[in-house]
Image (cartoon, rainbow, N blue to C red; front, top):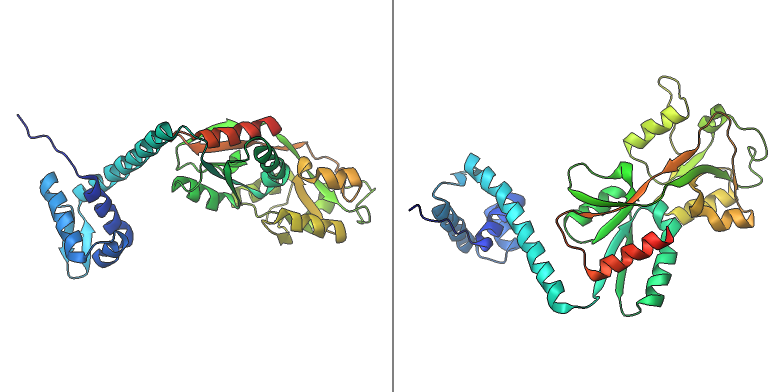
Length: 302
């Protein structure tokens, strides 16, 4: 009977550390081992596998083809082991604990203050951390398990991460100005919008192409924001006091529209705009009770 392979998880962690850190010395510091101890661990893994995982040379170590295959499997095994440890901890604790989630600037402007208010009212002992940032930063944190879930536009979801999605209802998007803006009260066409001083949160390249199509830009003509910031409230104050055109979901400006500080432009020949937001989390990771409470709150308020 063929001998069964039993691989030590710590040795798999050491393999991943060597690849990610680039050198044995840096990897040893990362895993709190001496370099000779780390070398012995890698050698022991190679003995378990029965094949070389690294080629040794004067310039350091490089993965063999077998090493590349083992690396890919090692990352999946370590991820599953981490999920198992976390799920067992949740079962043992039987408690709410803490939740950390991320939102893009627009959904944060729409929902975050109400979400935090409701959660503190209903679950005062729950520890809550909310990160407002661009989608690239949020999904990097989600993938490294620093966040339980994120809330952002569907078109910003990465294709390289296996996600579970809970869609929210679409949000209308418009162009907003202060009452004293030269475009306010007039019939506005697409050419005037293209020439306006636009303000927005940072948009990815794909979104810029969508805006070019929407605004019917001519070949070679581009539409870029004069002002971009992840701080949506700063953009709102800018639009209230200066002649810029703010691009935003309607609900993000509920107070400003009710008080008359900003008004929505009515633009000829422009179809209604909507953005679809979804709550996203790692498909293979069990949500904690705290994360489920936070998601339920967001869904109730959306």
